[in-house]
Image (cartoon, rainbow, N blue to C red; front, side, top):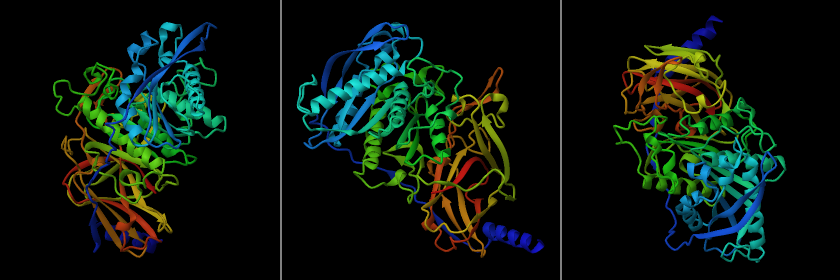
Length: 549
C-alpha cells in the first residue's frame, strides 16, 4: 500500500512539475460563407382557415398563412419550418403577421438549398380566444394542415401557395426552427412524431427557447405547472440551442438546461449544440418585434452601458450563419468542422461573434464522478457544491449557470477551483485503459465572474495535462482568448429571501482538447488529468464535468 501511495504521489508530482511536453491550442474563429440570396423571392400565402377545438368545445377559425421560398434545385429538397413565438401581437390578433419577421431567414435558407417556410401559429398563443394556457395541440393541428397542403402541392395541385411546388419538397425530411414559445412547439412536435414512430423531423434549432410548457401530456389543453423538465426526454434528433446573453423575456435561458439534460441522457444518439451569444437579446431575431427586451427589468443587461449590445442587423447576421452552418452539417451537405467536429478545439468566435459554445457528440462518456480522488498543489483548492433551485439549496449562490433556475428542483454538481499563485495545480486520478479511439477530452468550465481573483471582462488561461501510468506527462495550454474562459460582466445583487445573487449569466463552456495533442504519452494507460494554473497568478473557475468524446 505504501508503494502504491508513493507511486501515485510520484505521478502527481511529475504531472505538475516534472519534465513534460507542452503544447498549445489554436485560437481561431469559425467561419461560413453564405450563398447569394439576392435573387430569392419570398412568397406570401393564405390557404384559408382550419377548425380548432377549444377546451370548452367552441370552434375557433385558425388561419393557414405564411411565407415560403424555394431553392433553384428542381429535385425534392428538405423542408425547414420556422415557428415564431408568442408576441403581444400574437396574443391579441390571430391574424397578425408575426411569422413574416423571419423573411430574411426564409430567403437565405432557400439560397442554401432548402424549401423554407415560416407559418402563422398565433392561435397557439391567443389567450383572447378563451384558452388559459398555450394549447400546443392547436399548433400541432396547424402544422399538420400546412404539411397536408404541401403534400397536395407536391403532386402538382394548386393548394393556394401561389407558386409551383410540383416535386420540389422532401416531406420525409423536415427541420424545425422555433423562436421562444415556438421552440416549445418544435420540441413537442418532434416528440409527438417519435411517439408515433415517424422520423420525418430531422433536427431542431431552439432560438431563445422557452421550456415552460414542455410537459404537456397528449391532451391538448392540460398543463402541469409543477412538472419537472427532468421528466421530459428531449427529442432524439440533432438539436441546437441559441442563448441570448441579455434575454429580457426568457431570462432564465431555459435552453441551457435542456442541453444539459441531453448531455446527461445516455440514450441521446445525435449531435447537440448550445451557444451563448454575448450581447444578444430576445426580440431582434424577428423583424416584426419592435421593443428591445434588453431594456426590461428581466434582462441582465446594463441599460446605461450598451457598448456590448448587438444591433438588430447583427442578430440577423448571426442567425443566418448559424442556421445555415448547423443545417449543412446535420443534412450531410458539409463535413463537420469547427465547433461541430470533435477533433477540433472549440473556436474562440463563431462567424465573427463573441460566443461560448458547447457540443455533445453521440457516445460521449463521463470520466469523473463526485468521488474521484483529487490532489491539490500550491494554493489551489477544490470545493464541491451543487447549484440548484430553490435558492436554499444553492451552495455557491453567486454562480449563475443558465437554465438552472428554469425548473423545479434542478441540480447541477460543480467543483469550484481557486488558486492564488502561479503554477498551482489540481489533479484528478483516472483509470483509462485505452482511449486511442477517442477524439478529445472535453471539460465543461466556467469562470466564476463574481470572484475577485478574476478580472472582469477578461479571459483566464490554464493548462490541461494527462499523465500515463509510466509517469510520462503532456500538457496543452488553453490560451487567452478561449471563449469558455471569459470573465462575464455582472454585479452582485441582494434579493430578499434569496440572499446575494450574481446578476448576469456565467455559463459553462466546453474546453475541448483533441487527443492528437497528447502524442508523447501512452493513451492506452492514462492515470491522471491535471489542471495546471501556469498562465495567470490568480483565478477561480467552475468545473462541471469531464468527458471523453
